[in-house]
Image (cartoon, rainbow, N blue to C red):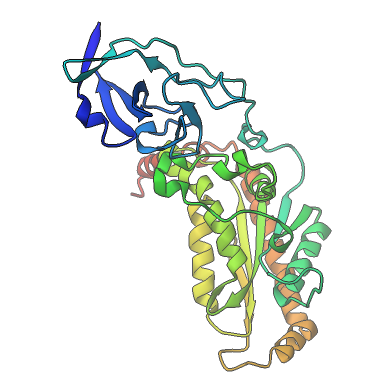
Length: 365
């Protein structure tokens, strides 16, 4: 049987046109004077092919750039097995017709899941603490960083308490900035991150691995730059949208029972505003906080003598002790959460919907 898609003039105005066969979404292609009709849904993450573009003879999905031949539906060379269904076409009386049933079936190649896509399970062992340095600098000619120095103090204290520790310096990683897949569609922002899946050289994977699969405690250190956190912090945060987005689109919480604490230093003031952003974001991705979740140092807006600021931090036993105490509070809080796992009152299942339901059941809503 044949389905009348409409007058051919409707499909010659552009290379790709959305249409339907019954309730099925299809894309009509017009290339070199010839028509093709394919399923309108990409194999990868369900992107709308009709909203993509034509690259030679291949339809390019607008979400993650997967390609399909505009008439056969086969994937690009090397990936032909990744095919979307195609429909037979004919032109009669100035109308374009497509077969009511696809002429070929959808097929997918063997694509092993990304290592980050594994089930989130905490392995047995002591509390695990990751330190995140967001300070940017010329690594070939390093300088003293007040936030890094206090982070090292905190990580050393955590290790002394028996925690497993590691430090990730964002300045040492090569990772691409967020490229706005969420702006195309909420579901185009995937877990693992679309960039991470497509680019094996993107080193943001180290942060994802630490945050989602390894750490119980995240201790993040940032300088103050024009009243805000450093640029590397925001570059990392934009890429963490894929973690938060799983909560909103799939009710799936990737980060559970994790504690975050912060070290904020700078020659300029604005400590509380920086802390507020840090607390707001890490709460949004599922973290909890110890009592007094951040320490900070600033000599105020007019303190332009940065060498003096560095000297103050280097000599301050009070700041070093504050860093050690922050680490101890964070480790203690993480241990409390780990000990609490399995309690019938623990909010350990589901995302925002489950949280609201439990709160309602407890009579506190």
